[in-house]
Length: 337
Image (tube, rainbow, N blue to C red):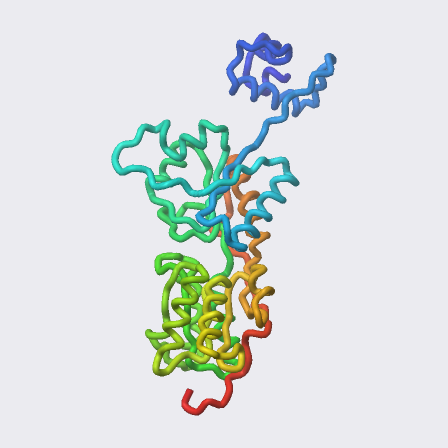
């Protein structure tokens, strides 16, 4: 029965059972899987090897609290279900032109025994995505900066709804000059947050002022630079919606350097709800992304792809919600502003 289930001859099944070496790895794996399915326990006491599942997890930036929370979700899920997770950074760009297959990123991972790949907040080229497909390496991306092919599987959050909630909160406090300090212009998550912000303004009948919309790189320094520019305008905003918490902290610092008080003189909202939001002074009002759960969902989705399952959707979005802290307050009476 075991030989039939594995699609091999009786002598081949016997070789695997007796630990002979003259059997291919693929054939051995099929026979051992069939033995496990039939509950076979060798009389010699030799345990059948349990196949090791190894996936790669790569980040653009391993320093941020955002990345650490994603990492925690994926590694905890891996420990629970017996998957080894190898963590690294996105490799340097490969040279243009023909590249020997054995030297490509995809083939290096395949040769190292990886069974799949999770990429976090990074930009992938079409050539890289096609390389993973040719190598038979399933791919899942979290908060992608771009999607070179619509069928690439992604996990994210409801960024548009989060942007809408952030701007609606500020509008409910009486703010009308609300700025947006965004991430990289091509980043799909930042674009979705921007569109949610614009939708809230439009719904409230508040004209969108183009000079109040800036783009940076999701870093503190970028938030400081954008905050300085916004607060130097002849008619500065009374509130800023920053596309992530690190950017929001940069805006808070820009306000501090100008002698402005938060939230009395300026209200600020972030996005992510990382540990930065709780450590900020005052505590940062922010849109919570379920980063830990996004990591867990990404790993389980990748394992379904590895197993050859058909997904109901290539794109999964987990719900966001607004967390109100001390960085936002009703607008003060400041005349025309």
